[in-house]
Image (cartoon, rainbow, N blue to C red):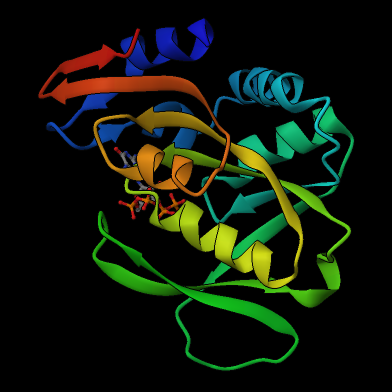
Length: 190
Ligand code: G4P
């Protein structure tokens, strides 16, 4: 999506070869107009797939997922992060390891808001190592819901997430794919 790539060129900061900072329009301050356009683009891509719900991974996945769910006319469900090990039989729960942040957390979803009738589109801001998205898949599959695909705003194609998810048969739609980064260099995939 050219609009997002242009914004990344203007405001994205490549901290090093791994980390892209997009705090001015995605992760800290949010550009609502860009977010709405990205949501519409995602919805347009998946419009004929029979999606019944959009799932966001808390927290930076919520804004784009809300915009996509609005454009698709379906509810948004938030996969919530909890630090706990507290078992709760009303929830589906799975543990996620974040490489970037070097932490473990529990991703949870209430059994009330998902069922085997659902066909779900997962939306997140970044696809890096694919741990969060893999956990989201695991969680949704516990309810026997089916997965329409994964939409991400930014895929760092030089990290293993894309291949990990593709290998599980998930359709991935990325609005911007980054092939390579270095300090002050961002190279998009053609
Ligand atoms: P994964 O989710 O693809 O496995 O990646 P990883 O564990 O490495 O990422 C952990 C967190 O770091 C995720 O956010 C992910 O979105 C974020 N992240 C990964 N690479 C980048 C990057 O280059 N730039 C930025 N800005 N973030 C990155 P999170 O923990 O879910 O946090 P949040 O959603 O609350 O922001």
